[in-house]
Length: 476
Image (cartoon, rainbow, N blue to C red; front, side):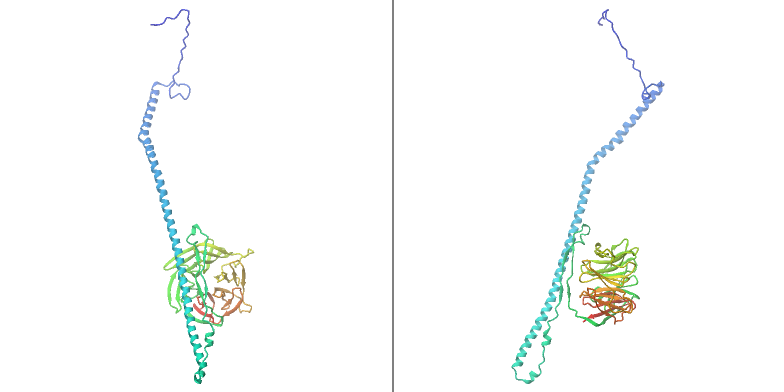
């Protein structure tokens, strides 16, 4: 039933016209009056796209994301597992380093025990000698008393005095006690920075210099041109010539061992380390190499510098003389293992200590820690103390036939410096302050070069012209 509208009421009805547009033209603002079949086709294509997207989302994309979400905890677990693996490796390396340090410390303690035993053995020997002499003196005293009381003329007339025999005590040995020098710990070189234990040095007074040194041993080597000699012991010597073979001889001239250099290049110089290894400098590939047993290990490889001569110190360090690639600079560098510890190049005024150029500069560390360099080009022995003080020796006051040409150099237990004079075929002996003492020139020294001394201060000379090593006695 409809409610009647009063006659006096006016009703306004508003009609809203909505203009339909198609999806294709919605972006243009006006309908382009497409045909009916185009709209249907467009809707069908959209639905097909929807079906494909739905299928890809359900069958591919969503499963991939679900798998990725599942892998997140696995990745976290892998991170923890890898971190634990690294931590374990670090702990293992730390334990290995601790073990190595403990092994080194125990080895040094063992060295101390060995040196104590050696020291005590020398003391025991001295005690035996003194006690034996005391017994002889006691017996002599009793004999003298009996002679004073006897009336036997024959006994008294046969008496020979032994007082001169007893007047001098047995030779007293000198001892340089070992010291331990702690080093600041370097994280990159813990093994090498623990410190160094100096060796026990027992020396006997060697008396005064002989007026006429004499040859004790004459060793003929296989080198045509002998360059260097370095004592492995009092009875074994490493030698170097002008080829790539290093040879070890005994005092009888027997060849004990031959070693070819690692690169096949000739070595520039050799030195025996405190532990008995042999190091050599290879100037062609700029390396310092260690011969230990049958193995050759490269200790140091230089860049921009060429290594030449070597010196092993009493503390176990290695000194290397080197020149820059352009030969304009020369320096001496101290190494502990492969770690650089000190560079000696300039004096206190900033001037170069050593001459430039590719000229030989042999050197040695003296007992007072002075670094003594035979500078061939400068015609001088240049000595630098641990405190940086400097002096030079340029030849004796007397006139030589030729200019002073120092080549090889070594030092002895009295801190005297011995240097071979190439042009004058002799050896100069100077004291630690540079005072000339005397020559050695009477032993057939034709172009003497490399020098070294043994524990008894016997001098070994590499004679270039003859290829011989001469063992000389120059102390009484």
